[in-house]
Length: 483
Ligand SMILES: CC(=O)N[C@H]1[C@@H](OP(=O)(O)OP(=O)(O)OC[C@H]2O[C@@H](n3ccc(=O)[nH]c3=O)[C@H](O)[C@@H]2O)O[C@H](CO)[C@@H](O)[C@@H]1O[C@H](C)C(=O)N[C@@H](C)C(=O)N[C@H](CCC(=O)O)C(=O)O
Ligand SMILES: Nc1ncnc2c1ncn2[C@@H]1O[C@H](COP(=O)(O)OP(=O)(O)OP(=O)(O)O)[C@@H](O)[C@H]1O
Ligand SMILES: N[C@H](CCC[C@H](N)C(=O)O)C(=O)O
Ligand SMILES: [Mg+2]
Image 1 (cartoon, helix red, strand yellow):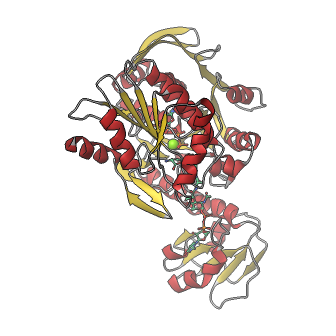
Image 2 (cartoon, rainbow, N blue to C red):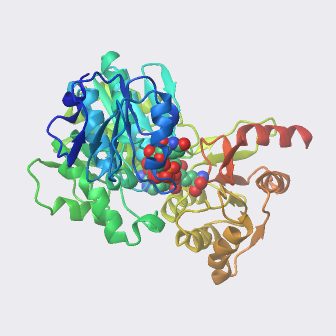
Image 3 (cartoon, helix red, strand yellow):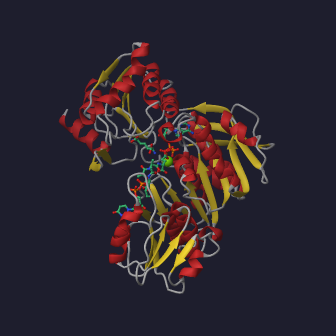
């Protein structure tokens, strides 16, 4: 594509060199540059992309986008913009020709439940014989191909690139988790969605957003980028606030406690499933959901609302929900030779833990044992709150390491324990996560339940910038073999 076509009508501050040249691709990482690529030098949290301009040229870049004034470079076109991160989003859209326009594009935001909702919805669409693409925490899925992603919502370039693959694969629906970071860091700045879904909002990521008000404001951006419907959890106080905002498109609400367009009543919770009456406006239907817990019922209601909007037959929706398989690392029962009740779950926020523990508490006849930690270099405010909640609902809490990143694991454990100490709970600190899991298994009796929370689908532990292999399923099986 010609450089001038990539620039489109984007506001450019200065151009040095030729705009007629053919560009073979866009990159913001110098290491990935190929011949005749456009390199976008952006200022990140750790590096300034301008420092890699020489590297990018050596790798073959023929044009560069910069924020800073730089000296002319022979044979290289220099395009200066006010904000390179913003321009990356626009230029990527132009280069890939806005693939999201050729599919139904559904964005899901909220603190908890995005991944779960996206998998439930994907399952319904697949059963409806639709082609589906998905991007989120567990990676991208395009047809049968899984592509690992570094972020829940990748940067704008990677999103457009994956959407382009989805267009090639002729997907009908593309479902994407849209994190608050993504909304704030312009990863979806020049994309429009057909549907926006809001699951809930609770304390998380305050290291980045500083206040709940800012966090909510970031989430809100999704709902002014949608053109068909916004689907809102009306039981969530922030969800309710969204429905009071001005909007050019209708809100469809879902809930359990409050009047909603799509609502669950007559609910019965079981350890492995949930049954309820689905009220769709005036219509009623008995439904079985093969997932446990009120939180999953909310996720299912969000997915049901979206599929109803798209006219999916209620029979297809019901059979999908009845047969849905557990989502990796979300309330996942781990089969084992000792028949111990061991669950791996991705709860890593106070609210996520509370929801999962409330569900488990109501089914546990023995002791509820929880192994958990908190991520390093992330929200610190949530740590004592997580401690307090686990203390409140468990019989034995074992505080251990999650992904310490660049922090001292013992400091993180201390922060969590502050919440525990407040209530004088029964807890242990076992910093080594394998030792912590082993301890839980050794004291576990037949009626007990072990919840190993925080890492869910993750198969690594991140320490000092390195992701070391860490497979909790294998760790559990090895420990049980040794018993
Ligand atoms: C804070 C944050 O969001 N950082 C994101 C950001 O990285 P960064 O700003 O540190 O980048 P940097 O290392 O400073 O590099 C700056 C520029 O130099 C370039 N570079 C760098 C090195 C080099 O040799 N050559 C080169 O050209 C880089 O490609 C980049 O363009 O840009 C990267 C590329 O897009 C992201 O992967 C990275 O996410 C990091 C890994 C991250 O942990 N983000 C978290 C906070 C996040 O975004 N989380 C949300 C929410 C999760 C949820 O709760 O659901 C998510 O969506 O994942
Ligand atoms: N609707 C919900 N409300 C509260 N907690 C939930 C909900 N759905 C799931 N959870 C809990 O939160 C954990 C993470 O769920 P899920 O992966 O679906 O959320 P997410 O929003 O995608 O998280 P992330 O921000 O990390 O991408 C689950 O393992 C479960 O413990
Ligand atoms: N999407 C979440 C994942 C947290 C997973 C947990 N294992 C941790 O490291 O804190 C985040 O980026 O905050
Ligand atoms: Mg997710």
